[in-house]
Amino acid sequence: MKKLTLAVLVFAVSLWWLKDSTISVPTNDVSFDYIIKYSGTGSSNELLPMLIALHGNGDKAKNFYDTTLDQMTVPARIVLIQGPLSHGRGNAWPWTPADFSLYGKALSEASELLALKYPTVGEPILMGFSGGAMMAYYQAAKYGDSYSYIFPVSGSLSEPLLGEGTLNTSAQVFAFHGKSDRVVSFSGGKNAVKILRANGARVQFTEFAGGHHGIFTDMKTEITQAIEQKIESL
Image 1 (cartoon, rainbow, N blue to C red):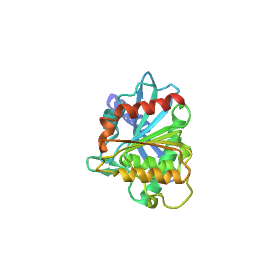
Image 2 (cartoon, helix red, strand yellow):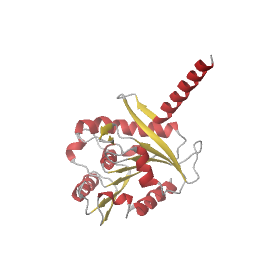
Image 3 (cartoon, rainbow, N blue to C red):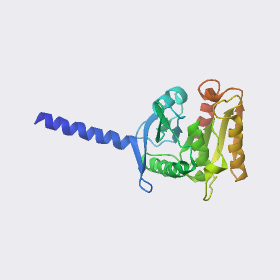
Image 4 (cartoon, helix red, strand yellow):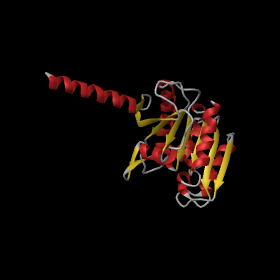
């Protein structure tokens, strides 16, 4: 009897953990795994600004937090969403127009659901790096009204990836890209900004001398401070 009770308890706890770490989007049958971290004095039941963060391809959500967002000090709920595709030892974001269409719409709906699930101030802020920045640019072009601000770092965007359908560029975008980037070209980042501006988006583009991983080293403090400033404005 004790073994049965313990088994039921373990099962119940596992269901609770799964519920809190997966967000499902019913309209297109897509689910995203995620983890939550709290910066500053933020706590789980508190009404807080939400930062949704998308890691680079081949990475994991937890590692992205540990190497990129660990300097944040203002109170916020940081939701680190794991890429939906397997890639090497980690996960990745889409790179084909069909996958961008599927997962892009799902992510915007998941962001809205997360803001309803947790006590959230205003619309979420979205931040992405590399492959995650490509998705962040896509969100800025197609689903801007789901976010207050969007921060793509070392990403790109092209017209074919946007596909058909209407655009919504209402979120203000703060983009960062290294001029020595050998993974996602600097010109790719400038092209993303060009596309957004041509469609009415408000974009601030910051270039720096470093390479692809400057977000982890020379630009980490500046990007952190830029995000914190917008968090405090909500």
